[in-house]
Length: 440
Image (cartoon, rainbow, N blue to C red; front, side):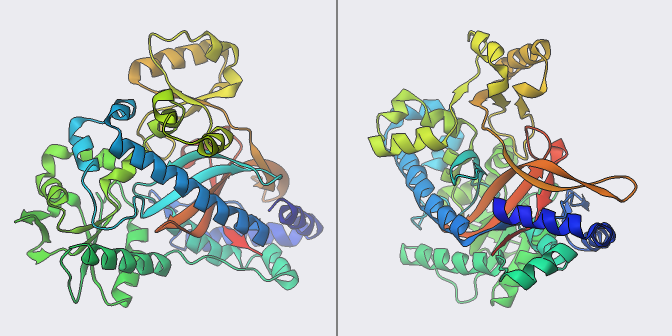
């Protein structure tokens, strides 16, 4: 990806006037597309992230390796009760996690985010296994950016391929539902699928695309809020019709925050008669405390030396931030640490020590300790160049920090999602940008 990035820069600087006009055209095209995040036009960068086949081979190996870690971790949690306090889940959540789903995949869908470096190495940022999103950022953005001036030039030089993120998920849902039925679940000739989330929290454009693809594959499909469900004899219903499959976009934190209002859904999960993709046990990996658990001696005793070496190489050191801690080392070496809340998402509450002076950072550590944050080793930046568009329409080539994410469906790599920004924390909350992700 770093080699192809240099070629993009060369094309843009050689055709500066054309590219400046082309950017305006692309900006308008994105604005009239479905590339929307939280009701606003998606912030994007002009250059796609272009990955090579060698990059993809590494990512496929990464997917295989990380699922070994993920599945071993979940087995440890399920089979060794003494480790569960490290995760700190409530008794209500723990009881839902321990329910055995009728298919064997612990994490049916995820997006695994990591920093990818020029030597092919990588370090994880976080594993999103719960309410995984951003397909609707990647897909329409790529539709537009494949037609820009620089990408037309690249397509004359190379074969450029892209990922399809919707039909590929529906195909995996079919396989998971088949496994559910084979393991004792009730079959339906014409399954009713619901995409479940609070609409105030979800991605309505993305849901509509998934709904359309489900329907094109012969499913009846609805977009349903979790508080609209009704339970009867363990089965879940919506507007009088039995639900066969739930594509759960509702993140576990939101579910537990509304636990008392979601009696029907909770009873349905406990009865285990509806095919819910995915099960609540994915929270074992999704929580920000997961990396803390991987570095905890009680958990580590159950991993072999090979897996411990993998964890130590790719998972940044993470520990709880407690009011009783001696904060000296986190102050003296502040540029090498980052703090995160345990269970927010979209990078809410994530702060890097290198972006604050010592006095402010000390206050943030103390506040984070009171509120139950984690502290984590800061991962070095992965840097590529892109265009910074100035107010007058001209551009300058600028360094951006990158983060790569893999969409994984049914434990298979199905796509790439790339974000970038100037700050140490990369997200839309921190003036971050989305990139189209393609493969040569």
